Amino acid sequence: MMNNERGKLAPIPRAMESCLRLYPHMHDAAYAAKRFSGHKLPPLVLPSSREKNRILYWVYEYNPLLDSSDMTMDDWIRVAMDIKREYENFDGFVVLHGTDTLAYTASALSFMMENLGKPIIITGSQIPLFETRSDGRDNFIGSVIVAGLYPIPEVTVFFNNKLYRGNRTVKVSTGSLDAFDSPNLSPLALAGISIQVDYRLIFHPKSIAKFEVTDQLNRHIGLLRLFPSISAETVRTLLQPPTAGAVLQTYGSGNIPSNRKDLLEILKEATSRGVLIVNITQCSHGGVEAIYETGEILRDAGVFPGFDMTPEAALTKLSYITGKDWDWETKCKMLMQNIRGELTSLNEDENDCGSTGILSILTKALQLSDSAEVEQVKEMMVPTLFFNAVSNCDLEKLKELLPYIRDINYTITGGITALHVAVSEGDEDVVRWLLENGASVHLRDSNGHTPLWYAVEKDNMSIIFLLRKTGAHLVEPLLFLGETIVTAGGNNNLTRLRSLEAAGCDMSLTDVCSRTGLHAACTMGNSEVVQFLLSCNVPTELKDKNDLTPTMCAEMNGFDYLVQLIEQYSMLKTNVLQSSRRIGAVKE
Image 1: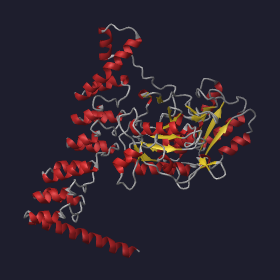
Image 2: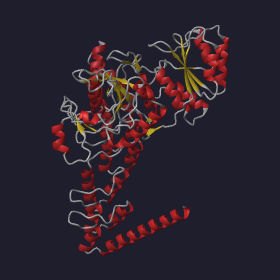
Image 3: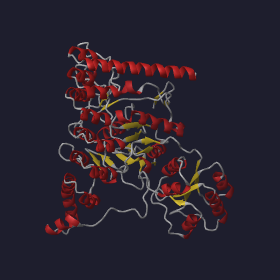
Image 4: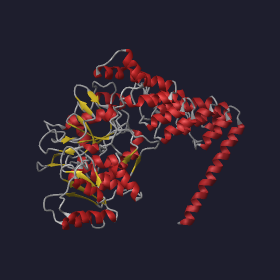
């Protein structure tokens, strides 16, 4: 938001990036000029901070810009699909949003983003970003830092130095800079002198599946807040077709008037014809519990408890679930289930398993009785024991230690995670177990490598496929990958080339001399490699810095059979292309 010609706050198109480049605390112009002077779309660069790495970021602006009060489900879908399109190109995403409907967008995106492995942070400000006095700068800079350096795989809200889970967030003030709160869950992170993340609260995806976006949201959802003497007609109107789901905000811990049989009949009739109704409290804190008779009556009428969900979370979750092509039983199950960290179930494990096994032995040996001392020993010893179990491929010991792990993506020296170690050891069972318990495939070590690269180095195809199935992708510099391909092509290392291709690498990448792997293979006469690279559609007409094509390299070194092989491939490719064009012309 900026002041328009009438002095009123309004979205101003194409103004943000140009303004950002003028603010030295949001863009290091000298560093950018030195590193990216030749780029057509140079990034913005955050100045040096307490963090080790520089953060590069790009701005994508919607046209037209929207006031947050004008946001619709179509806009949620648009944002989600744009993130999906760029998902493999960035380490994290920040969405700048007006505060009025920010909590709705955060909740909606949290459900739409399935198997999310990277941070998506929604932020905004109470005072516009470029005002002299503004909370927007801290919110913006804090969001970019967290998204760029802290791999929290959730849709979150960053506001006033606090990082909240998106679907736990509500707007609580129109005039305070502390405009948002998470009533029933502590912040995931606090930004003080340093950024402190409570990794125990992070909700990790725990399925072997790639990141996906659901764009089928059901718009026939309603929200009804009970009040004394509410008319039966009001309730009936909300629940009549085509309504597919409704959020019912009741009194206290989930109660309705016990003497309103008419309301109960309307609710029961609606649920009997397939309307999903979820019961949440009108209170800011706490949740729905069936401890009173009136709450139990609602359950008997087919109304599901929403526990401590916010209205925004309950509404968008209903839209997500009823938009799915699931049967009734599955929809009911998912409504009650904690699928994105949006609710606290009454029977949810507290993850306090006491002291068993090796930890019990250590506690006794050190004669520890004070709970604080026991916790300190756990903090010191558990990561060491855990990494040792990973190195030894001891799955049973890992299962025993899991309840004590503060963060399954904990890193040791060199930025190495347990998944890095497991992949290097080559034990598929341990890798699978780690993935099913929230290990991230996107974390890089100090060398800039994710676990996928080490699977490629080991040529372990089964683990490569497993990591790819979970959404892993190569993040190494294109020149590095190109040189790796060229080296493998020249060394007749077909196994490595197959590993790179399985990992999703573009096999047409070049080295510093603009040579492809096909150039190298033709130079050395490696026919199997040539056949493989041709099957990967590596261009045969590309010239290196010496103006040589792969065919010329083969001719110069007397490999006439490779020249014939490339010519046959080129002719076949031309014939296939012409045939497809003829088929297209006939169809037209």
